Image (cartoon, rainbow, N blue to C red; front, side, top):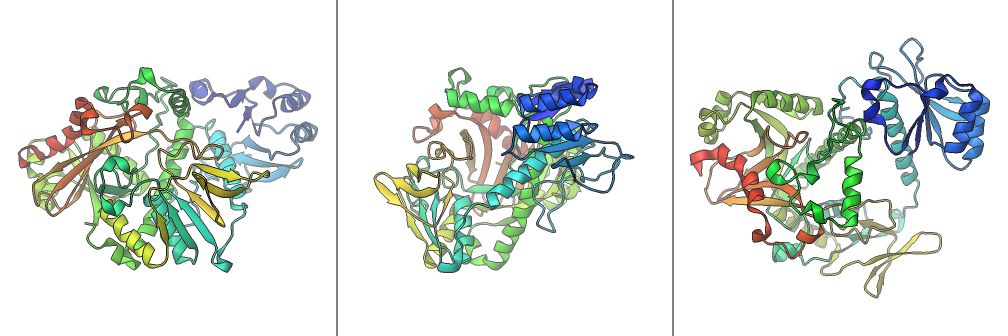
Length: 533
């Protein structure tokens, strides 16, 4: 999305909004309208942000220069200028008023998820008046793109339409469950072995690889971008170039990255703070919607959760008082906080943490919305259920190509020389599926390594714990380590760093993980339990 800002932005946030796709022309605010029309024709922006609307002639010139593209205007206005309309038309173009926070016509820029009554809006802090138009433009553009996807051709269940699903991770299997329940004919293809056979973890993807302990929380899937509007440093998104031993995420040699990895890092680091906050709100909103679906599944498909050590609720803790208050406020805004606990209250409810509290490790705790589950056992139950209702699964079958006709429509999937045709396709190939996604609107993932430390000590703590460390990454305060207790063992898991192509995949072994990554990831666990393990 190409944006033209045609008024003077305050200096204190100017460096935070300028980017490759943003054209800043404050001179147009005082020039005649013919100059705006000329600029619109030459630069062809998708969005025009102004304080005063230009002439109709200037806008029509813009339309003539981009007849096949939808354009819109965001007008920065004050509370007195704003009417009640959220949008209006001017010279054939939609105009959206951007109103300061004392008149919240846009409800602090609502997240994407709007169709679930119980899904709360996630308010931002007071948004700067010059940031608000950009946030509004991003939201409008995203909704436009989502609307375009909704218009894509989909074959529905009128004739028990078929769906080919690529990838058998948790996302694909839950999707298969809902599609099968709606009457679709489902076939699943995965390059890995049947996860119920429990082969070596390196043969599997994220869901079946690694440890069994997994957590769902409202603030999960943080986008990890810098969201701090300090105006001090425009490029703070450096976590993936900083070593784990220096509290960053780089576990690979950052001097030996491939071109694709360098491109990914550049795009990640280029995300401005205002956009990172929008992304984060969308993630939290989607997680709220997801929690409703998980709750429904737990209630109405309870057989899937037999023997999977489902634990409702999460206990979050922090060792630093100031940091603890920051985390509490974040969870309040995300509407994921159930209650706060003093160290004494924590001891009374969770006696296993008494040593940690008495040793001064715990400054404060909180009970949070979420749950933990043995995901390996859960997907085994889910696969059994899917096969019972007629879903076919083909293991060790890699999909190598998406085949299209001359109009760009998908006509089949290729597995070697075999063509696989269906009415609909769902493709979720995981982190190793970037080549398959080539030519689609989906972007590449990068690879990360996680650690699970297993402690053979029964009945230590019957709760799921999120450990918050103030020394950790500057904008990832919510989950630096987590553990879940089972009947006979405790697993602690933490994401320890971006791995890069050369250190991921079947070749990785426990010995291949640097010792400092292991020690950094295990430190919160050891500090928490002390002599208990």
